[in-house]
Amino acid sequence: MATRRYPQSAEVPQDTVLIIQPDVRGVSNRRELSAQIEEIESLTKAIQLKHLQTLVCNVSAIQSGAFLGKGKREEVALLVEELKPNVVVFNYILSPVQQRNLEKEWRTKVIDRTGLILEIFGERAQTKEGRLQVELAALEYQKSRLVRSWTHLERQRGGAGFMGGPGETQIELDRRIISDRITKLKSEIEAVKKTRELGRKSREQVPFPTVALVGYTNAGKSTLFNRLTGADVFVKDLLFATLDPTLRRIELPNGQKAILSDTVGFISDLPTHLIAAFRATLEETLHGDVIVHIIDCSREDYQAQKQDVIDILQDMGIQYDEDERIIEVYNKIDALSNDERDEIERVIGLSERECAISALEGTGKDAFYSEVVKILSKTYKDVSFHMIAADGKALSWLYSHGEVLERHDVGESIDVCVRMSPADVSRFVDGFGYQPL
Image (tube, rainbow, N blue to C red; front, side, top):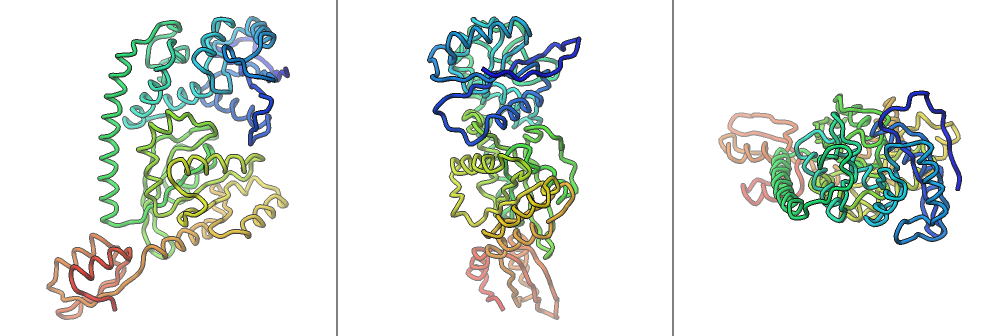
């Protein structure tokens, strides 16, 4: 059992955390142990917990009742007695029985990776939709647990600990009330989904193609979003700095307009409750004309993060390797050495639909735009029509279903150049009889 210690101040703040990092024999992981520790420590930082210490526990076999063997549990108990943390974060998914037994033995609050991520989402969600989704995910998680898993974290700042006040760690949940609340939340989220579909249909009628940014949390999606749109989306070096989706209109170098969408970041072992609850939000990605996968190539484990995102997208029904809408954008090249940058450029040269950028500095923006335009040019085309000026209905249809690039009024006729999808070109030709020039 290895220990990682950190300097402690004389005055320990109220919310302190001891992290338990299991190293389970025979369980393969895409990341080195050091990367796993770095990530869980960053997660506790994101929820403003004072990190006391990280303990690495070698686990030869998972115990069904308490995960760790007796000897290791006793060692942790001694450390808990010494440090007196408010909460022990266990960087693994615990069963309800394992969580309860560890709490009883260590006499302190224990939450697993899922509970911690739910708490972060509870604090960060700003919109009504986001709060509904977090509450649903939290209740689904709680339904199988008889204790209120994170009430120790409830403070004036909010959070996912909406089930009761601090200290109520052993109160049995009323399953009927929870089930009723879950049913109500699902109904409200379904209404949100319908509203989103209406909004999407409205955008389709404009129509502006949509460009969806996806990627691992803290990969730089919001920084790129701000760089391209001039917006002021919250950006900070924290995991899950952005939860609520943001949409802005951008203009590409060829004059084409598009809708850019910034979405919630992904993470390894993202709780299934959260994936289900946020599906209405994530479906914006499914319908994007272009899907931009932002990859933080400055990290040693960027390949593992990349694969985690691919796995989640494929779970959502996106055939990653076959989907021609996807661009892989290797971000944060400003943080690389010259040799590392050369290696990324070499990797990019092996495939299509890839580019390297620094969202922070703006480097590579032209290459990024070029890849977006390439994909959109395959799905949208510029067509010209010679029309009767008095045919206002046909002209109105073009304005509502395409992007009018040029218009010349000549006597009783109009020459118009419009950018539309091939499907809309066919519908216009069939509906109004005009043939493309």
